[in-house]
Length: 292
Image (cartoon, rainbow, N blue to C red; front, side, top):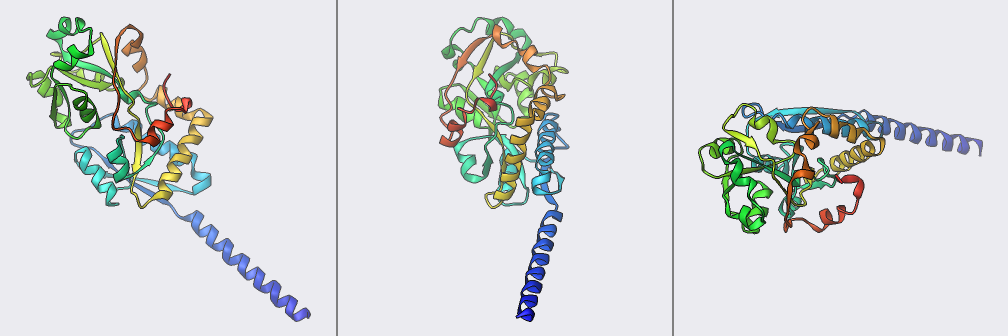
């Protein structure tokens, strides 16, 4: 009887040690996250999303273990980046959502810009300031040719609602505006100021804002639910402890954007987003996630 009891306890002890070792090995695993880093047509705004990804990983470290961010330096359009994440050749991409993108990839349902990606103000040619000051209806605005990226969800939203749309490669759009291929270029609130700083022929319009629901998410491979779970856990932890808002309002890319945009002084044109999934629509009721 004593021998049986001793054997039983030894078996339990061995089982416990194995479980502990497996747990420690799992904890010792480092989560590696590959993301695309633009180096040729450098977009300074990418630093905000990289810092936000790092914040999410830090806030989830106690729960999920260590991590390593691995930049993949390669110049590619947004659609190509999405395809590489779908193929698990990259691990994460940040982009405005659409039903199509949520079918392609696994979305982390947390709006990285509090919805301000859908608050759009225009870059125009300086000589056209008076022309845009006199725009009073959405029909007038929609009749004027607007430039947007070839594979941006914004382009589909505007085109579906009757805007006169000209598509182009993202890095060419400002030059296309200067060359009169179209007459204005809609940008999110944090985007236009640096983009016109060295282009005296262009300016940021001060008279109107176009608003539509446009959450921008992190997306991962459909086969990597663990990474999506970890990123969402970290983002929500950062929201709860205030570190998300601290980064959002005080990052070098976003700080001061609300003061410069002067939304209260602008004429508001509201649009629907027919490409918003039901899951994204449901998220609109979580007021803490959005800019008021």
